[in-house]
Length: 560
Image 1 (spheres, rainbow, N blue to C red):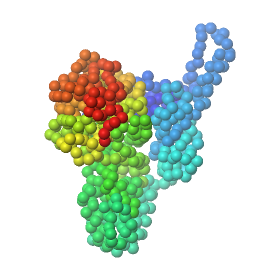
Image 2: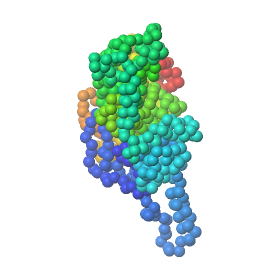
Image 3: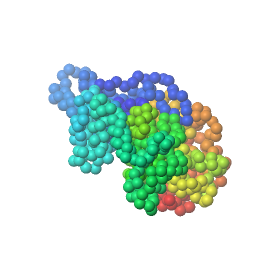
């Protein structure tokens, strides 16, 4: 009664949808690889419909009616159970995502992240659904809506998320134009600017596109804003001069998100997988609209893949609220309404979603490059290694396999590059590929995958590969090697070459660690890079390894 969507890596629950057909084609190997969307094996699905239920039979036709009735009652009860979705959110396409409980299928455990197929049209009318209601998908599957995303009071029916969900459903019905809010704000701004004494004809568009705070609001600005002033008022031209200065100093663009809440910087980059745009950004001072709060720089990841971003948001929430939160960046916000909240209106943000997280200065790969590929040593190496180990502990204690543990996915929060004895404040990022232990991977990076997965990929059985924590332990060993030597284990080999080389390794593989002087570190790396996944250590063994213990870094005593 459910099947696993191969592209979105999300469980869909339908009683009449068939699983996509199989394909033997393999994807093109890139820096970060995506398993082909059309080749998810049928073994991951259990697509049954009410009309095709199969009941136990015997060779004899004289089976007791009580046995048949009991069987039918049990099977019918399976369909009668209505699963509940908590922390739910409705996408623009009408799909509901949330954390499921009470699901009738034994394959779906309580607490799993789930996305439904599109709900029926009658449930997309404004105010038609709320907490406690039951919605039905186009295929007939039913779900009970529990707590809405971000709501701690189940009785509060007028919270912001409900309002947003209703607005989304209205837009899907075509009753509200996508840019209605933007136009309304633009008209409001135009009216207020009529009373402004600035001659806009003399001001460049790149400056006037940033909302200008009134003199009254300037006098009440907080100390966290660079606009703090001891004077009671400023002239319009002083406002413009300050905006020009801030725009240049912080590389601010004219684009904003969430109705001006976030100010985007120029020159966005692409993620290592090439699937997302990465913007540096700042939160706008609420007392001085358009003025950045520079004390907390942000990273905003924008992608058209709603399900991938909601999965990443769920992974951040699950890991960082667990027993061991690890050393991951802070997740601040999820934006699922970019089309109506961006300014100026841009087609580039149509059908796009955003994840707002804490920003760093550079990733560990860039740190090594800035050091002219000299490996980290001493305290700096242990700082980075311990931060990564704690992230490993956080993921695995949450029953999650990261599958993308590498130097690009750890950032440094300050300007240190390890030359002054330490490398504090290393944080983990990018949990988009994190999956529950025992499930199948969708994305993988060749430099981070273990030999057993590379072998499965080359043989064409990667889609049947079962994830285990030993996957990340291998990745951690590779990360330690790169941090210690300043270079990746496979050097300049292409992703395809790396995958083919890894596939040749067997249980007898022994890594070449000639470039590493520390014997304790050598022993730790060698144990992580064991060719036999069953013989690799767990996170507890890593945290208690002599490399950490003898230097004062125990599992509960890591220095910040």
